[in-house]
Image: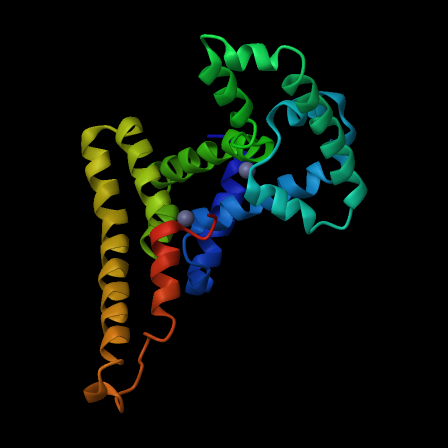
Length: 234
Ligand SMILES: [Zn+2]
Ligand SMILES: [Zn+2]
């Protein structure tokens, strides 16, 4: 287990215990990795030739372009865009018409269109995020303290819950996986039952018979249910 990953994993798990509103600890980890990458690409990394070759080729997804436009350094973004567009310009001229008209025309269009789907930042996050998942599973396996932390989490968003289960299923032997599943699924199922009840109560509040009843925890139930279902990193 690599030490550099245990720190952010422990920090995120501690944070969600201290304040359950932080929600899924893996969303916290993801958001931190993402913010870091956005900061780097609009800062120091931008001028590195090897990075620029990659950003020219891949570009960025809509979400990450949007995060980059919120950064102070607009010149960085403009320089990245300038060379990215330059490369695209080259790709779309010359033989492009022939490729489109040729027998592999749909392939050529697919390839050109794929630029708007590939993303330098998504790929960078994906370099580190699986290590965080792995570290959490290994910490659970080796540390009683972390086992306890996992059981005290408010919930795991559905995308991260299924992702960690899929990793643990391959990594742990059957008996250990059963124990892991017991620990994590009791957190998950308890939250799922709670959020479902909160949404149901929210619905009931629209019935005049419940008008004078209190809202309990249901005022923000829609928002929390969506956060649970899709994660806060989407
Ligand atoms: Zn999550
Ligand atoms: Zn992206």
